[in-house]
Length: 493
Ligand code: ADP
Image (cartoon, rainbow, N blue to C red; front, side, top):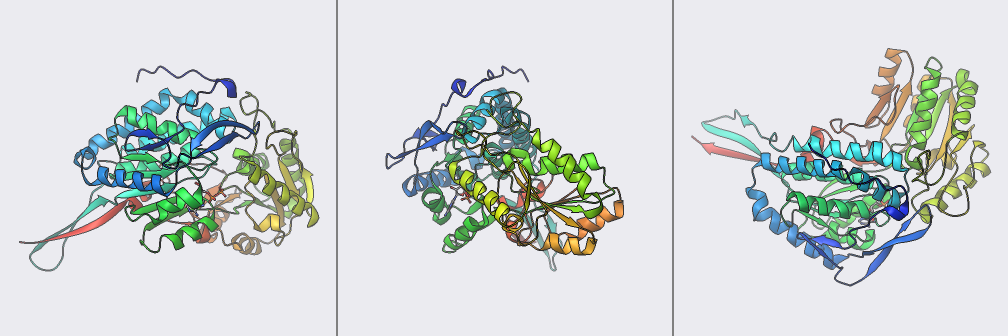
C-alpha cells in the first residue's frame, strides 16, 4: 500500500481534534438537547474540547438510522466479500492516520504516546483486518435430519448492535467491537466512554471516507446512565456488547430485561500472577511488572495479585522493586515516558484511597505510595508486600498502578486462594515445570491463562471472563458468534 502517513504530533498542542459532534446516519450533528460536556487532558487537567452530550433522543435517531441501514439500502445488499473489503480499507486508513490517531488517544486518555503507537494502534488495526477476512467465511451447515427433507442453517447478522465501551483502551475496544459486528453484517450504535470520545469520533469519519454506507456506523457520545442506558433500553437495538465494570453490567442486565437483548460482557478482574521458585526469575519479574503497570494499571486483566513462592520471595521482591523504582512517570508525549496519568480525577481519588487502605490494613509499601507532582492525575507505581488475602487491596479491583504481593508455600492452597474471587478474567504462571504449568492452567478458573508470559493478545485468540468477569468471548472465531443468529431452514423434497 502506498502510504502518506499523518505527521507525528510531538506535544498535546499539536494534536488536531477534528470531530466533537454525534455521528448519525452519516452526518455530524449536535445533540438534540444542544448540550455539550468537556473532555479533559488528564496530564494537565485542562479541557481539550466540548463534546456533544447525546442522550435518549440522539440514541433514538441513531437506532432508527442503524435499523434502516440494516433493513434496506446498500448494506444488506452488499456481498459479504465487499463488506470485508471495506473493513480492509478502514484498517489501511487507520495505518495512514496512525500518528494522528495515536496522539489523539494519548491526549484524551493519558497513555504514553509510545504505547499508543506501538501497542494500541497496531492491535486495533490487526483486529479490524482479522475480522475483514471473516466477512465471507461465515456460513451455516447442512444437517441430515430424519425424513425426505433438506435441512440447513444460515448464519445471519443479529441486527443492530449497541456497543458501549470504556476509556482504558478506547480505540482497541472499538476495534474489538466494530470488527466482528461489521464483518457479520450488523449495523452499529456505539457509545464511547465520556472520558475518551475523541478517537471513536475520528474513526467514524475514517469509516465514512472509506465508504461505509450511511447509518451502518453511528456514534452517540454522552454519559452512561443517559446515553448508555438509552441504548440498552431501545427496542430497535438487538444486542448490547459492553466492556466495563461488573456493577454496570448488572444495571445493563436489569435495564435490558424488557427487550430481552442479547448481551456480551467483558468486565473486571483481580487476576492472579503466580511465580514458582523454579521460574526464570528475571522473566517473572518483568512479567509481574508489565502485567500490572501496563497502561497505568488500567487493564481489566491486570495481574494485581502476585503470588510468589516463599523460597524465592526476597529475591523476587528485591528485583521487582528495583525495576519499579526506575519507571519513568510523566508527560505522555515525552519519548522516554513509561507511565502517564490516570484517566480522571475519580479514578485518581479511588486509587489513592486504596493506597491509604493498604497502608492502614498493615501491608508493607515497598515502592511508590504517593502521587507524582501536583498537576495531572499521576500516581507513582506502587507495590505492597506481605499482603493478606482478606485485605481490600487483595480483593477489590483497583484499576491503577497498585500491586499486591502475596506469598505461598503449598500449591493446592495457592490455587484455592487464586480462585477465591468472584472474578475470573485472566491468570498467569511462571515455572519451568511443564506439568505444573498445565495443571495450573486446568485448575484456575479464568478465561485466559498465560504461561511464562503476560498480556499477550492476538485478534485470533478469544478473550473473556469466567464468573463475574463476563459473558461470552471477544476476538477469534468465538467473537463473531454473538453478532449472529442461526436460522434453520427445512425444505420438503
Ligand atoms: P468505569 O467506572 O471504569 O468508567 P463503567 O462500567 O462505569 O466503568 O463504564 C464503561 C462504559 O459504560 C462507559 O461508556 C460508561 O459511560 C458506560 N455506562 C456507565 N453506566 C452505564 C449504564 N447505566 N448503562 C449503560 N452504560 C453505562
